[in-house]
Length: 350
Image (cartoon, rainbow, N blue to C red):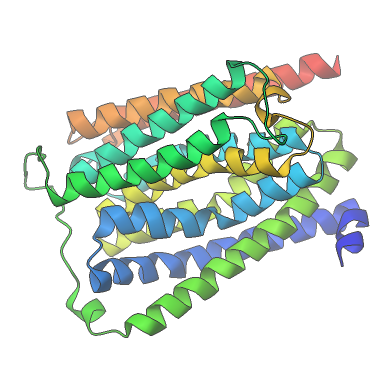
């Protein structure tokens, strides 16, 4: 089976890529409903459930792809998929903002949990940059920044939970603020069946990521595109489809905090793609073998996340085009990043 996926023709690789991207989209829609029900049924709340459950589950396809690429000695694809995914998922919040007609999404979904998740993401991205520019020292082919990423993520979640349990700051309530309230129908559902369905859907996302990695590798080889371009523009978008679908589905369901938390929390978890890829990669520190064009996306993700946090604090009710100023700025940042990737690719080809 593995040899077949490695040696398949370009047409089949493209077909599989499209098919499994569609599978991710369908499964992601259902997953948003399950996580929202689990948030109510378990008492976790939308912010924590979105960050941990939906963030991790929708990231499975991406982490499988990055780790698989690192094992196959494709560090550039592994890291560009991880970092490009963080940027494109932040961009997806603008789609959710457009979908929510009543007000700016960041205005309606402001919460201490989402702000804490955003600052955790800034810290995790900063650690990635520190790893990139620190001395190239490894222990058993693993860079010291890798365990720090895992420790920082777990401790950050602990702080998020404490801040929500005993908040020292609350956003002002307005007529457009959407409060996280339990759904009575969700409280009647079997907790066991919800967990089993959640695990089943998450497994499908993981398998889809494995097939996407194989097909993306073939597309990169046959099309002449660089691994960075394929990772940033192709695989990161495809493996981030669950975030897009679940975020839009959560907005339509009225679970606004869940929608924003799923993106920000998923992005914080996605920084662990790099840590897992460093462990899987046997050629030394993965942070030091990727080109600057990949590291650029860490800086862009830092900028986009900073803008998003400003939007959550500013809470503009209506902005340009009936979306917030942060959505406009995030779109501009992502478009500039894509332009730089394409420009660098053309320079390398020349």
